[in-house]
Image 1 (tube, rainbow, N blue to C red):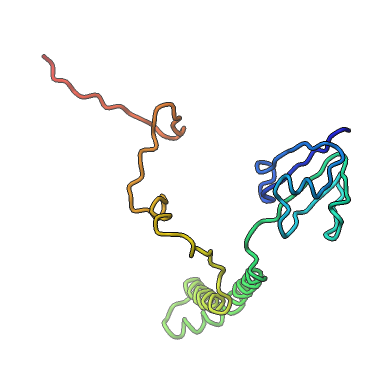
Image 2: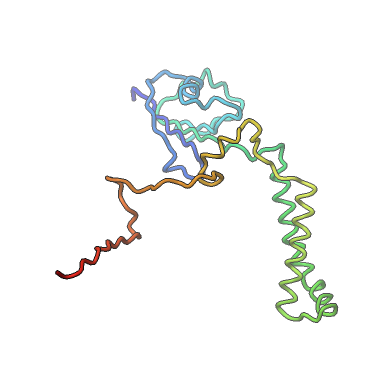
Length: 192
């Protein structure tokens, strides 16, 4: 085989529609492939050569693949030093706690306000979930996107945050969605 076929998967959650297949000449190194596709950032993507996954400490400048290479870029964001993983675990603990303590709290609610049965269980688990969510958000705040570099004009053109009325999306030679039905009203002309 005189070429190396690289399958670059940009989104691991949608591998078929986000992949890009590129051909390289034989003799190219993995490091050169990563530089060419713009995926040489930290963290390194997962690299598989002919079905064998490379280790994280492999010397990418010395490996010259033959055949097929699959490069899967890891999803960006969500790191935050492990805060998001801790938030997920904490919210799972809140869910389990709500299920365990729903019955005793429901008994207390039925004695206090006279609500019984499924309504008491629903109120109890809802109160526990709300209190637990507030506690988790206070102790482990969510990662917020940095928008300090944006100006107000960036949001003014946004269809979500902009104040301006959006334009008409219909134009000549633009297909209508299949679920849209159009009726044309003809002006009624009085008989002569």
